[in-house]
Length: 118
Image 1 (cartoon, helix red, strand yellow):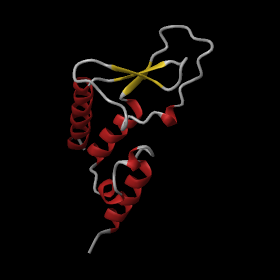
Image 2 (image 1 turned 60 degrees about the vertical axis):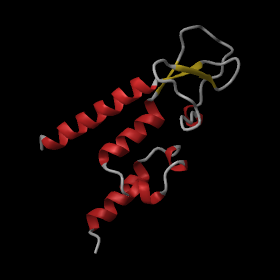
Image 3 (image 1 turned 180 degrees about the vertical axis):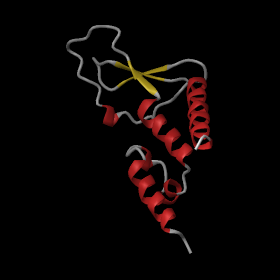
């Protein structure tokens, strides 16, 4: 028999995961995600890219963060990859695979350290 805690975590996970990630994970996968995995997936979809505003571009529309779907964009191993939502437009620089791996490890270590200190 499943506990009430399991059902609460399940509902929390389904609500907490980034909406773009839902296209790539089944509900059962999301429900079974650990807090670390959930944080890592959310990082990938919410913060594994940088909107580049280095050059002034008054005619460029703002990047719609809700439409940045990193699941369909290609990353390179050792350098950032540039993508555009519109032309003209501000470039979206995806973190490299190496940078992404380092961030995912940092998240894992940070959350594991925080959970062990309680």
